[in-house]
Image 1 (tube, one colour):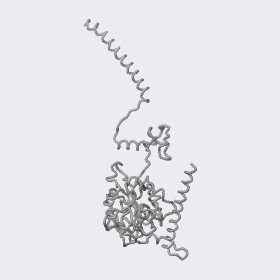
Image 2 (cartoon, helix red, strand yellow):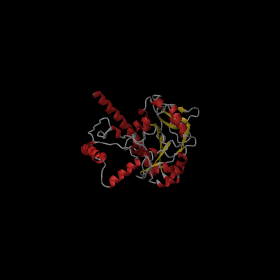
Image 3 (cartoon, one colour):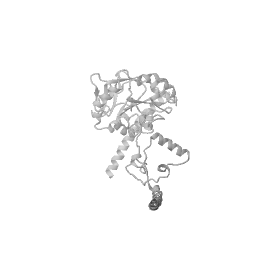
Image 4 (cartoon, one colour):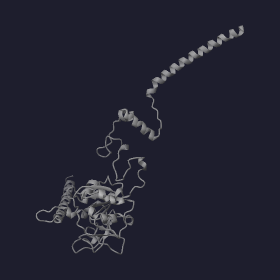
Length: 375
């Protein structure tokens, strides 16, 4: 028993020392952790729904996540960013947009089952709804439909199922070129390969939009229109449908009308009733549209300035053709003045705009050339 007593004392002393040393180390380690923890950053990957839930709770408790509310942003100036966005990091800048319809729920990257490739616009009044309904059926799901309503009536179009997926923009008594200038900026429609800017009175019994696009691509047309039925509302020989070919790019006009066979109206020319633009051509054409010249008269003769060589890249698609029904619906939106019928006042304005546009373009050319001489 004595031996056991003598050997137990050193063992207890050793155990006590271990406890003391362990305690001291624990205190030192805890102190170090306490000092260094605020400077450490941990990254934990949590499910997005859980993060959203946490964010909602933080915001509901008037607490701002450090990375959003109180984080100091770096000083940034990127001169190559779009004008006005120089203070933003390039990775957050979204310079272009589209007309894709989005859901109000779910994952954003799951919103679109299919992205339309092309944009089709019609400037319409409700009286032509049944006709437009038949026209829209000629365009597949690859085409986004956009209606500009000049009579202010939009909800009535929901009788057609396709209308519920269309874009509707309404301002009373405005023309398609007024709408195009304000709502079809090149950065808004850049998601679409081709942009159709059509009147509402076009018969499409002999037209297929998908086949039309195939032909435009095949023949390298940047600006085009379908051929017109020769016996309905034809003004120019260039836009008359030819039955013996897919596409034509030039024609013969009345004597003295064409000083150069590669210039309008014998070539490099389409009318403004049913033009189709590539997105590259439209970026140029949009800038040429005048804010106050709303009818677009004269624009057809100047389209050639936006593509080179124009006599090769502007043409008429003959094998997919349309009929101009010549329904003066927009003319009735005019106002009777000085004893003139509403439609007559609209027509007088069209002619006046044609002269004004020609003069502005000529003056702009002179001003540019004078600047180059001085330089």
